[in-house]
Image 1 (cartoon, rainbow, N blue to C red):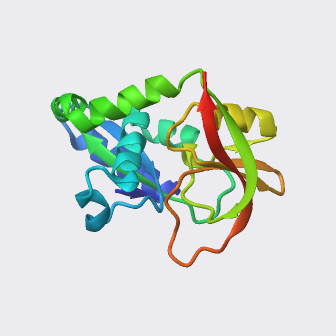
Image 2 (image 1 turned 90 degrees about the vertical axis):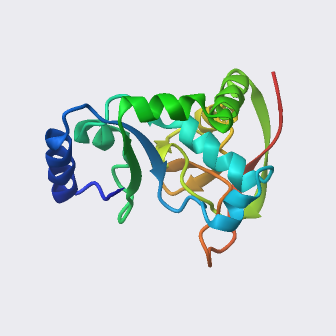
Length: 184
């Protein structure tokens, strides 16, 4: 479902969860992530791997509306989160899926690494970490280094945002700090 972080979305999610005899778990994906058929058909492609990295990195046991609000950007107008609601048995099957396991391995491998960044003009790409803003460039780079889905740090007027690789159609080039070589 598209959760647009409104009062109506919150009420709808709470009603949906209240009707279910079992608690829901969820996967939260940022808006604009690329998952077209051609991207997913290429099992060795970057878009396919990136989608699995986003999925494995955004599983939440508590899928209450308050959790979604806590994880959402506070000032990104028009932003929504794609929410995949699943029961525990489905989540268990997903966690056993080889692409999910590989993505978890990539996430674990990325912890503790330090990446070099270079300033370049690139397409902004999809929000990483739900458009969370960082006040400090060093902190933003540190968090970006530890997440395979983060490919760049985008300076904004009031801080920095982490962005992924998938770009929205028609987006223009902007100045960003692009993640390059990573090492432990």
